[in-house]
Amino acid sequence: MTKYILAVNAGSSSVKVTFYTYENPPRAIADAQVSGITAPPPALKYKRGPVKIQEKLKEKLDTPQDAFKYILQRCFNDSELSEVASETDLAYICHRVVHGGDYKEAVTINDESLHHLEELEDLAPLHNFSALEIIRLCKEELPSVASITFFDSAFHQTMPVHVKTYPINQEIAKANGLRKYGFHGISYSFILRSVAQFLGKPVESTNVIAMHIGSGASICAIKDGKSIDTSMGLTPLAGLPGATRSGSIDPSLVFHYTSEAGKLSPGSTKEMHISTAEEILNKKSGWKALTGTTDFAEIAVSDAPDTHKLAFDIMVDRILGYIGSYYVKLNGQVDALVFAGGIGEKSALLRQTLVEQCQSLGVAIDSGANDKGPGDETVKDISLDGKGPRVLICQTNEQFEMAYSVCTR
Ligand SMILES: Nc1ncnc2c1ncn2[C@@H]1O[C@H](COP(=O)(O)OP(=O)(O)O)[C@@H](O)[C@H]1O
Ligand SMILES: CC(=O)OP(=O)(O)O
Ligand SMILES: [Mg+2]
View 1 (tube, helix red, strand yellow):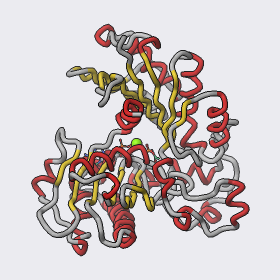
View 2 (cartoon, rainbow, N blue to C red):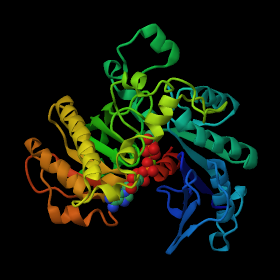
View 3 (cartoon, rainbow, N blue to C red):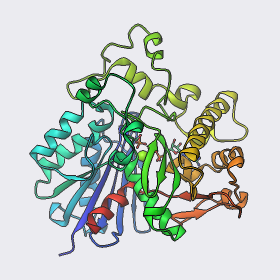
């Protein structure tokens, strides 16, 4: 009997799942996403073959587990998707877990690994909570299917010690796991393989500066196929601003923000032990705080109001800072600057502005190709011929990367 893989990408406000055939390479047979869990009504996007459905849901889906259960039932009950009708049709469930601590590779869930992940939750309650809730649910409701967790942080284990280490008391740092981990690694691994293939180079000798710019945004310096630095840190808060995240700020700002900032947040629970400061900097900052919208498509327009223009300029400035730093760290040996993530893939204005400001690195883009975007291509070259690095768009796919890893191991 043909078996299928279910790949789950759970965020705080959305749950995305894709069903794949269990073959090399895996082929997507259906894709479903519930967003707006924290801002009801929830919305469903469902794609099966040529069929595309978008609807607002009447159901109350307040938590990622509710959203996941809803998606699963809907897919299992869809008579047009008879391939997956119950747990017996599934070979594996892949889960994206943002923070994997010291894990260097994916792990199969059993009591021991789940317990270890639950301990890690303290370090990253805001980011691991949704995924862990869904893993616990799968263990209970789909007990015959093996769950494998893939970690965003695993790709960055190759960063040198001096890059990973914060200059603080090392006993305390070691006891509490306080170091730079870096995230979006499942995406970077997809980007690296796709870009190396596109350039016709072995992964082991590919050097790129890759940007995953979405509602969470990061950038990564990849040397000889390995991450040597990335902008996120102990948690995904560090580095670039995001839709609701401040990105890097002077840490002292926390002590001056409000007198309440250091206290436990009212939203804190047994599972989500977070302070008001963490909540403000993760959920009430970023371009939402500057402009009122989390939608970068409203910000990245040429005739935007001043508030939006400021948010755009901040984003450009912070990204430029990292590109400059990583270009130097890579000793100028850069095969390509790669744009990925919802914004990196869709905003021609952001790409154009950034590349114009990186002229000193010898990069230039073909504005027609840039405006057209990647279309159906996984990797699209938008550079003008020149001596400098190529400029590429890569349509990254975290669910595919997890399924691919399972099918090729
Ligand atoms: N045409 C566009 N121009 C600029 N930004 C866009 C466009 N379309 C979508 N986006 C932005 O992409 C972001 C979502 O990217 P995505 O990588 O899916 O994020 P995440 O996985 O973190 O939810 C949102 O901020 C959305 O506004
Ligand atoms: C790590 C992270 O920020 O993830 P996302 O972009 O999906 O929020
Ligand atoms: Mg994402």
